[in-house]
Length: 129
Image 1 (cartoon, one colour):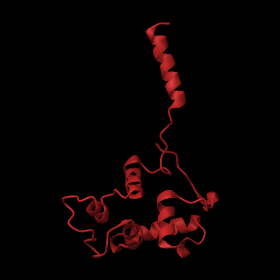
Image 2: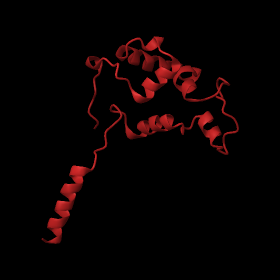
Image 3: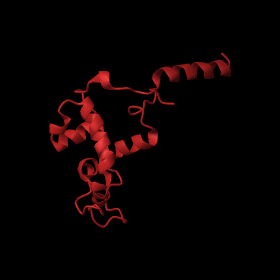
Image 4: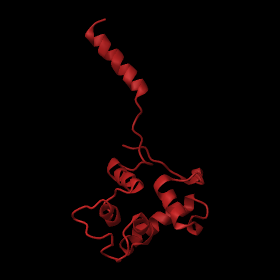
């Protein structure tokens, strides 16, 4: 076997065993990064940064509301994001039965990780470009 044949064989094997990158429901990589950071509690939110003693964060409080700026505050409470949140929660409520009646903890879990209680017939997934 020559080097070219070996290289081709290696590429074919690697393509078979490597996983392919999949998007978060068509969300681009930059936005998916923030979902991951929120999941891990390592986002740019003040409570997350304060917990890890970031030099630029002297307290965990939201500069708009004055309450702790954590994942729950960001996703469900902060007045800075009320319009965007309204659209998001409206769309999620169409997909998840009784979403509005769920606890804050369950809502956050669904927003960050999804739900098996989703009406799949209502979802339109566009292919990433």
